[in-house]
Structures are given as C-alpha cells and as structure tokens.
Image (cartoon, rainbow, N blue to C red; front, top):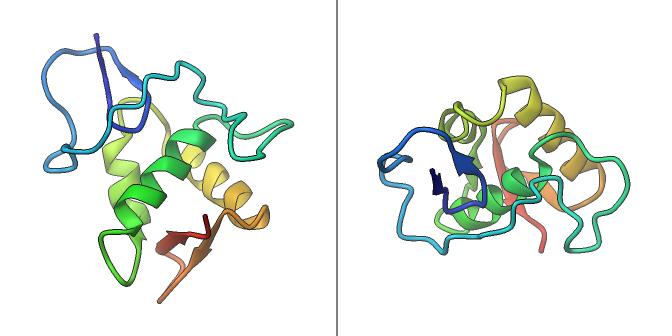
Length: 108
C-alpha cells in the first residue's frame, strides 16, 4: 500500500499519477478534511480534492482540470465524489473556477 501525493492510500502497488508526482506526500489518513477551517459534514474526498486543486492549479494560469482530477483519483473516488467535493469547496470559497467550469484554482 502506498500514499498518493494528495494524501489518499492506494490499494495497488506501484506508482500512480502519470506525471503528477514530485509533490509532497501528505500522510493524513483523514481524507474528509478538518484542516484549513473546513469542518462539519464534507463530501468524501474533499481534502484530497482541495490539495489536488491547490497543487496542480498553482502550475498553470488557468488552474487544475476537473477531468484530470477525476482521472488521478479514479481508484479512490468516484466522479460524483469529486464533483461533490468541488461543489462543496467552491460554495465554501476554498476554490474558484477560472476560464470555464472545468478549471479551478485554490483561493488559499
């Protein structure tokens, strides 16, 4: 079992992410958040998605791509989990869309 750079545990061995590596490996087993002032009931994977948007969004002026995020976490989160996490993060002001509804950057 290994840890993804965004904090989730993978069930299968080997590397994962197709070039997304090189980032800091977060070791929190709590993928529900609880950091950065995010409390209460959050959708599954919210903190993982927040970290992904922050890290990948900082690499580009247009932000992180939602479809790449779904692909990155395909073994950990369902597409609807990612969508729910994105909606929650946007409604709480943690992320914002840039050029369209598929590109996001962190407000933090």
